[in-house]
Image (cartoon, rainbow, N blue to C red):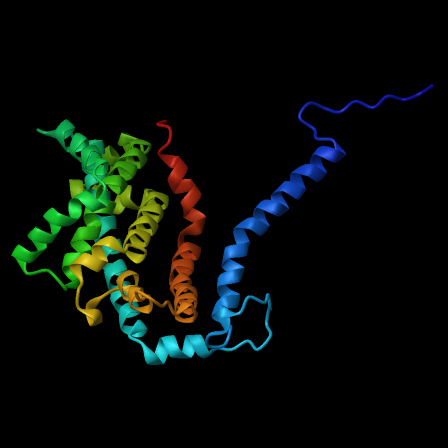
Length: 284
């Protein structure tokens, strides 16, 4: 008697599994191709990128990296970016966490206005805000100053992160705050010692978003930092591109070096990213 086998519901057949894995491999290849091409181009000898031949590690050289680190102001741009991104991350986390906690826990005069204000600020693109922010920075003497650039980046990062932190604090039971007050903590003590440690995944996402906002931004950096030695990486790399020429060897080597700090920050916070991004999606 012939035995008939039935597939359980949701179980894929052999052809479906092969097609799925083949599709995933193609997607991975497409995603990795620009990165691999970038690294290989950075390892080509000077003017080697002009060649149309596809070569992997033939005549590989670190000459582009040496020129970037010793023959340009890349180290100074890197230091400026690290300071700017670091200050933006620290200030952004503090402002977003305190704002999100206040809006989540307290009902004060203008509560709804603050919430709407945070939303409305997200409606304006960066290009529209450059002129008023430039006039403001010029009036305060903050042009070509890292604190001025940090303030400009905070206008992008804080409103979004404050809403995200509010959604996260909404998932933390109010009874925990009340227990802290009963134990003798002040309202700020409850925030600092009780609520903030519980919001660690949300803080990780906020820190990563603030860091990347400052690390990869170009518009504000180009307009507000006109002095070459004060520029961060986003503005400094434009010196490698002229009207009639582009040094792609320097550009690709710089791009690889720029990706390293961002990758380090991602590795430090990545185990909290998924939890932080999804924790505020639903309110318990």
